[in-house]
Length: 291
Image (cartoon, rainbow, N blue to C red; front, side):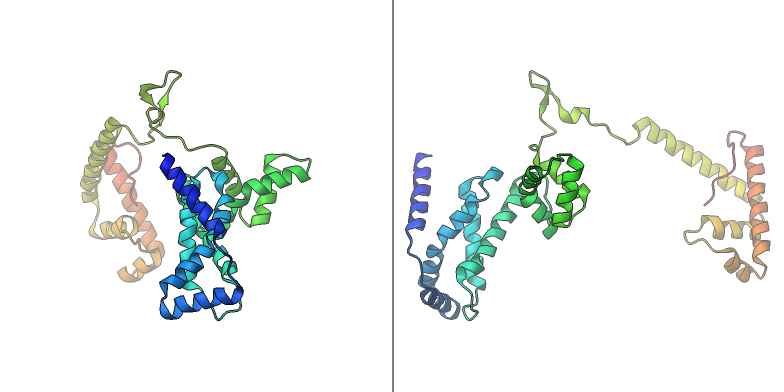
């Protein structure tokens, strides 16, 4: 571990001691890399801007992730900037690279800060990285420290909903908690948080009972349908049993009768079903549920 720490210190010292590049020299190196894929030019360009990576990574240390990992991700962003940089544009490479370095570090933080995936939209990212700063500033500038009011002002400033602010605030206020963590003062491993989760699904015996009852009712209904005439059965099937149920008007046109007549036949068929179920199967109380 001591050797690794020493290597890291040496890396940072080397990066901070790398000479600055003049504007024309920087542009010349960028041109050589873009046009000729000159890796020596790329190495000099990257080395001269590693201090920028370290400085930007230092701004995100309070998220609790290793500084070495932040610097490494920033280096990835710096390489991406070098690959995309257009020397003919009148802009310094450091200005262009800053955006890519910061974006790479922020994406790494969002992926690794929590086991729960953070926001992916630009507004959610802005909320994640600015919530603490904005909340501290607002609490200093106002005497109203009410949570809802602070959340409302932050939501207005960033352009997200107040619920999003409240949710992110809750996430940032405490660490993730494993469902496999032991519960109790003695951390008894035989009892975990997962053991106290409530399953909203039906119990196995309730599921079996509902299945058996459903099959029994279906059998009753199929037998009761035999009391209907062919036209009554067709109307009920198209009005109540079909996935795309027919309208009274459309069904009346197909049968050559008025929609009011279709309604009368449908009601008569339902009443015949109720009587058949009540006579043949007294346990089948109530009207049949069709459609």
